[in-house]
Amino acid sequence: MEALVLTGTNKLEVKSIEKPEVKPNEVLIHTAFAGICGTDHALYAGLPGSADAVPPIVLGHENSGVVAEIGSSVTNVKVGDRVTVDPNIYCGQCKYCRTGRPELCENLSAVGVTRNGGFEEYFTAPASVVYQIPDNVSLKSAAVVEPISCAVHGIKLLKVTPYQKALVIGDGFMGELFVQILQAYGIHQVDLAGIVPEKLAMNKEKFGVKNTYNTKDGDKIPEGEYDVVIEAVGLPQTQEAAIEASARGAQVLMFGVGGPDAKFQMNTYEVFQKQLTIQGSFINPNSFEDSLALLSSGKLNVEDLMSHELDYKTVEDFVNGKLGVVSKAVVKVGGEEA
Image (cartoon, rainbow, N blue to C red; front, top):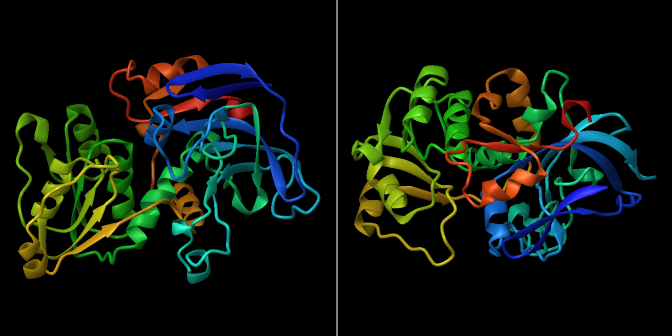
């Protein structure tokens, strides 16, 4: 079968590989779509993702498809089911898993990171991380349940109530997801800061954003205004802006992934005086069911955020930045007919 294989740092090759064998607790999935994101950028460049990827490896940790075969002990899905896959596989034995914090697992493995993922015609995953897709959700939308679930996990770490005003900093795909999900969780006003005029306008017109700030054009984010601030960029200047935008008693979610050695400055007295909560967020434990429910309910529209549908040959152009402004790209493998 055909697969897009990471064969080394900054090197992807289309290769013919063997279809994987199915273990008793595993599911073989005919890939429909596979999302591509910042983690794939990092792995392509030789940096760690949720775990370290060792080439040769087939990337693709955001996936949807159709069950082609099940192992002898699998009972939660059957052949022909439309499914999506949570890539993260926890050991269940380390102190973090045993104390209700599996996202911090010391022995984390992941589909598309430490084992072959969705940039191939067929891939396997443990049945425990395979989820059926509601009938009214397309396979294309279901391919991005993993990033949705990461945002949902971040919001679950906060205390959100309707009276709050929220600011999302970052108009990339994750920032745009947060705009919709915060409203789905009941927050009455969500504002968005970013650098792409078309994205800012679309989120105001389609997705209920009240105020937008184009920081590239010099718009100033109001200081001390917001009860919830989501930083979805990962740069020191946006992290500092998130702190500055926070009101008394605010919660600041540092969701954007910074560089391994990046640092930002903050006024520590302000943290004390405002009684701020500054929260990190890593991956997506126990968030797939909520994410699928958001898609099925119609409260979350992801296909309008998808700007590029790629094939194997154009993935490398994407990770090399040759496709210009990309909101969200998915790789079509088998498509809706998988």
